[in-house]
Length: 277
Image (cartoon, rainbow, N blue to C red; front, side):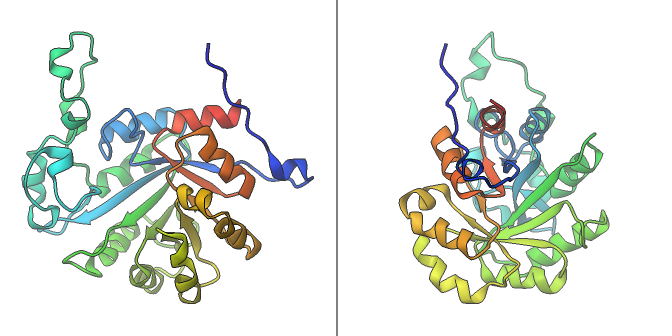
């Protein structure tokens, strides 16, 4: 039997009390299940995820859908751009088979509900979170650049407002690598939490003067590991830190040592088991 890695709790050893980080399912439980499908999100919820992460893009007819890539080659084997297709056209595609292309030949493979492999609208995901039997949060990333510019954030805030989640106390927070996008969200919904994603450690000195003191910072775990000064600086400055994409015990240890408040992972059950062990 493989032994569960034992995680250090550095800050607790130093006499500081803190709660463990929130576990956020990255595109759902996407390590084993097709990303951004209803199946992936339901599995993440059933595994105990405390929050869900999704990317949103705007279709040609104005619907927000949960899709990461601007084109559809990777997840549907189809040429075409999300932004040039209608929701009805996207709904004709299979967003699940790419994850297990040989499943039709495997007699022991579990049967999948084809409806759970359809394109997922943000509205459906919001309904799923709202109807779940416990509190769940939602981290929504807007993708840029896009032909629709600031319309993405406007439609997103409108969708959140329709379910009463555009104000203080909302379970939703908005993320982006775009400073302009985060400024738009702050203007449209001043009470929403926002997360400034950081792609490279050397970008932070440029970003630092542009972000407000109450913005959450979202660096990648590889940057934290390769550039330890980044994490130390953020913690020393009192920043709330949410880290992506945390998939191993070593990744999680980096986050625990820093005392981050959320870890975004493709493997929510694995990370939850590590934290509970």
